[in-house]
Image 1: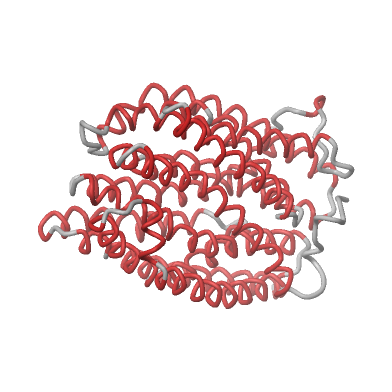
Image 2: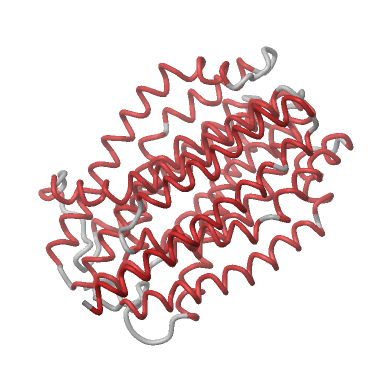
Length: 451
């Protein structure tokens, strides 16, 4: 059905080792993607000054919102294709792959157009300081112009993930990461282009990744091969993708939207806090990508096995994913905490920025084990096609709690530590609700199976 060199049999044999082989390249891929942004922040912080660094960093939540909205939908494509693999339906695979990629291009160009119209208004609503606003707008305009290739890359990666292949996107992104860093240094240090240079470098490296993955699918020997004559949107497949992907996108956007609210509060505390928050975010996010990789692995494994009707194996996948994710998260989060000061110094040597950055790292990383439960429970339910309830619970548990905290608590007490406390609090409430929902859904499935 597909290449044996890079894909895995997720329906038979052991689970733990395959989860690890699937998840770790996926985590490395996410980390490399974030390194694009981290390289942007580090280069402008060292060579273009604190304001340029704050301008790039202040865009992180908005960038995350734009990308995550369609990364979530790509998860719908992942689940639909995975189910067809479990059913051994070659025609279904072909239709869903072409639908996903055609839809990605359409959405990429639509988002590019809409983003250019509203970027200045959005950044002003985020309370970006006037002295930083022109640089922030310039960075975002260039970044938004690259959304078609950025979104296309995410859907291409989803196609490879659905067949158990996380190594190919990692290899391609590794090459793109080298290109990104080289272009960052060239545009900023040689051409003196500041934030414009790092934005162009990010778009160029993403374009490289998308082109290479697309060429590989054009030459794919199996059912995943892309053919020009089949490159269109199939309405039935799009509905299936959106039914799972839209709630997943909403769930991802909830995190990003709540982070925009928090970023607005961070911006109100001044450039030092903005720079510190940006640096800490670009470090702590590495731990999140490890956590999220096991959640996405759980989605793909459960999706294939649910398509094959193997519910017992689905439940086993969820249990093993949770235990492995907890263990790896503990190792990574405590390692980052131990090296927090020198890591923050990579982005900016200002002692005030480093001290403030450490505050954020302590609050975020100390609560990441709770975040593991959220990611695995959500990932498992998405694999079953049960995507709406996790999205709704996350909307209230994450977005609702964080907005309420900023509005009711931070606005009265103030302080950077007070603001950061909303992260572990919102994770705890959401993780509890998602666990209850998962248990209820599994019990219902068991009753249906026995009936």
